[in-house]
Length: 79
Image (cartoon, rainbow, N blue to C red; front, top):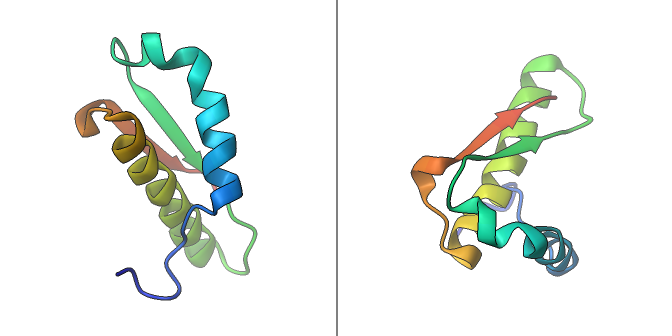
């Protein structure tokens, strides 16, 4: 189990991701999918870490849910 402060994708977030991905599933296998992470917290270091952790949570969900290749699924913490 993930530590309590680890971001997780909520059921509503999973539904929105599923809906957003549906039109593109036939094209995802041919390219790279980049997940951008954002956070509004105090301190640039913490903001980077939280936005990265959020992007990781989304990436992990998408890889598991849609059987995406981890090597073709990247992330970018944007603050």
